[in-house]
Image 1 (cartoon, helix red, strand yellow):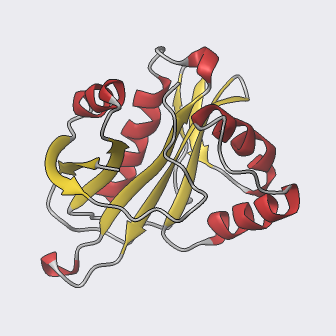
Image 2 (tube, rainbow, N blue to C red):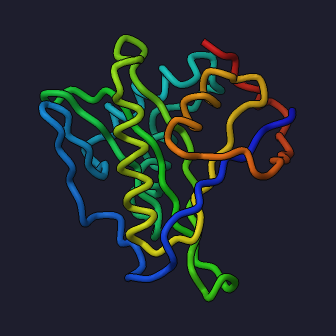
Image 3 (cartoon, rainbow, N blue to C red):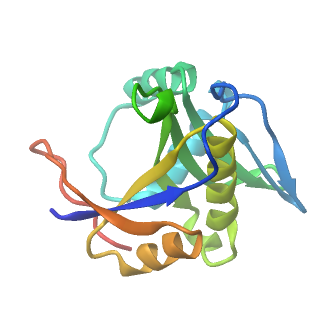
Length: 182
C-alpha cells in the first residue's frame, strides 16, 4: 500500500515538553479535552466509525490497551464532545528527538468523527487543537499519514495547512488489511 505523509511546518522549537493533560478547549457546545480512563467506551465506539471492519479484539484487551495509551508519556488521545456526547477523536504523539536542536516532532493518528456528525467541522477543530498542542510542545513538524486513495481526507488535511512533502512507506502485518473507505 502506498500512503502519503502530510507534514505541517510551524513555529520554531521552544517551550516545555508536552505533558498531555494541560488543556481543555471549548467552542460553543463542542469541548475538546484529553481522554481519561473513564472515556474507554466512548473512544472505543468512535473507533468503530473509523474502521467498521477492523480486526476484532476482546473487551479486556481493548481496555488494557486503552489504559496503556492514556498513561503513555507524550501520547494524548483527544476527545471531542457536544453536550457531553463524544463525536470525534484523534491521537497525538509527541516524540523526543536528537536532531533539529533536540526539538520533538509530532505524529497524529486515528482521526475520527462520528459518521452522523461528519462535515460539521468537528474533525477540523479536533485536529486544530492537536496542532496547537504540538506547536506548544515545541515540535518542529507534525506528521500524519493518509491512505493513498483517500482524496477526501487529503483535501481535508490540506485545508488545515498540511502539505504533501514526503512519501510514506509502511510494512503491514498479516491479518491487518488496508482500511476500506466509508
